[in-house]
Length: 306
Image (cartoon, rainbow, N blue to C red; front, side, top):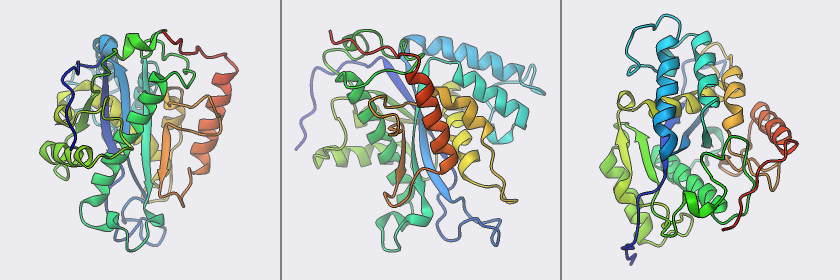
């Protein structure tokens, strides 16, 4: 039985999460079925240091109020899917200029085996939620343990000393999911409590506390808009529209904020694809690797062990 630690402290990193695609599995979109479900589903997370989040909110709110056709209107109802192409490019570029990192857990529905539990009703969303939390936990644990070099712009997220951004107590990260009726907050917490009590070793429980995981409406927090941009940018690249067109421009704008493992430039740690039989689509793989090579040539700043 898991025994909760008594010395946990509030963390300096907030994690904002939104999904991409739809969880339908019956009929996937194709030229023969243009109105079918999206071929890809997944979740994207935006990691931001608590001490700079207020500045990020101000910057992103300013851009949202300046979008064509939205001057003077409230930023609460800004949804990426409702914007024009020009506004989407502007918003993706605005997120790319923030001191944040993004990671994504992507599911290729066509590769899910017929008898897999994920095909049961509601399980795909739960699987993606577990996957993105595991990924964030792994990324933060790797950086905390001083195993990786850092991408440009991450200094505000990871200061020179790892002890400065994750205290000695290694308190839980603050996870905030964009609310969905398919997975409400109480179900989220119950799912991760069950994983913790079973001793799931794929999640660093010194960083993840199920009792502080939240689910909030998209309109309630500007940083959920950033998560929406991250998820929708990948969704536009992966999931064709009814006319079978995809759009790579948004992901290109956002790519400087993709988390990358500099230990192996061909291993895009921040973009995980499931099932294992699937692979990262070539446009996204090429985009990710080109960014990694560019950053490595700029001599990224290493984490210094305290």
